[in-house]
Length: 133
Image (cartoon, rainbow, N blue to C red; front, side):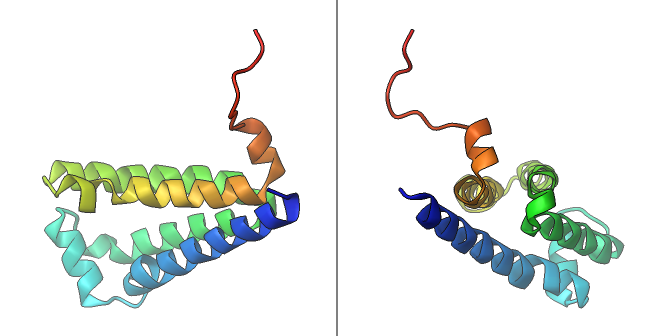
């Protein structure tokens, strides 16, 4: 795949990830939607953490979207998604639809970053052939 096409595909995945996070997770928490607070309470978190978690998610997303801080943002967002996975696992949520959803999001997020950033591709190369020994 050409470099330009990879960057475009990467920014497309990144944009979709960002829009999903904003619409499905961050905005409901920031506006104090009952569904966000109710969900956190059902998962065992105090409802008073809703705004704080939304602000942390927003901060991680902004860092991820900025080219100068994208790797830091991805690492921090991965940590946040790991906490989500642990919470879902602790309450016994269904494996493939709930517990692993944060893994799916993380793969989508890192895939977008990998496609749009040559430094990340150099750090995590995908080798289709066997390396010479």
